[in-house]
Length: 312
Image 1 (cartoon, rainbow, N blue to C red):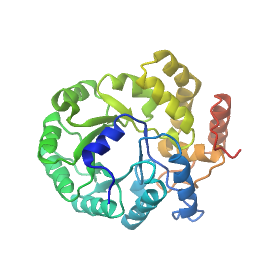
Image 2 (cartoon, helix red, strand yellow):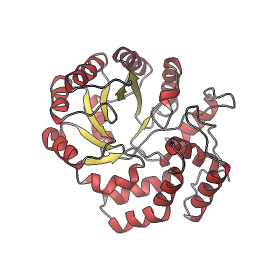
Image 3 (spheres, rainbow, N blue to C red):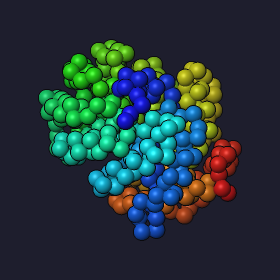
């Protein structure tokens, strides 16, 4: 039983920071329930607006359907009484429908729809794909605009008109003209969140395009810093935002960009760096090198953002 209607969920999510918890794995790369629950307990102890379990940073793409269901269930059990927990769904339409039903069954409040697997799509196909998933569940639906799923403003408006539980648009492309048209067409019927990696880099300019929130991967290991950054963005404090960009975010990006796929690996590296290890990443990703991890650890300390929950 969900606690929020889709519209209540949208209102909750649009004015706070969002994050995607990493999924903890043991030495055999199996889901580590104890470590994952410990991480969720810590993540939900701060004033975050929503947690997306088994999402991109949570390596949802490497989880089996059953693993994904269990990861979302644990997130609801561990954090759902403090913060809305959302799940993700991808693959084919039928696979996504199964994941949507699983998420609703275990108590997720909403769902982020990942792009359909591999195939190219036109707008009618994307509409039918999302429409079928939205019709299969009562939880709030957010589409992820990226890769082979680029939604036109008209398609989004059509989905909003025909499905009350369609509540959000997440963008990972950063096309200013497209996003301007999206907000102009759909206004406050939806909420809009930034999904470019790393979201903090783009947060302030995207706020002017109606994207009042974003998903912060670094919240996983430096939650206080991530929340302070979001506060500065919402206050339009450009001086404070630039100071934090220069002190931590931009040097962090320099480390992230050393290897393809480090977008997730560096987050798990950050967990290691603060002494709250959630294990390795699954292939095809790769763990950070010892030197890269050492550089990240040094950066966290130099930036003065070691979190209160660190075990150094």
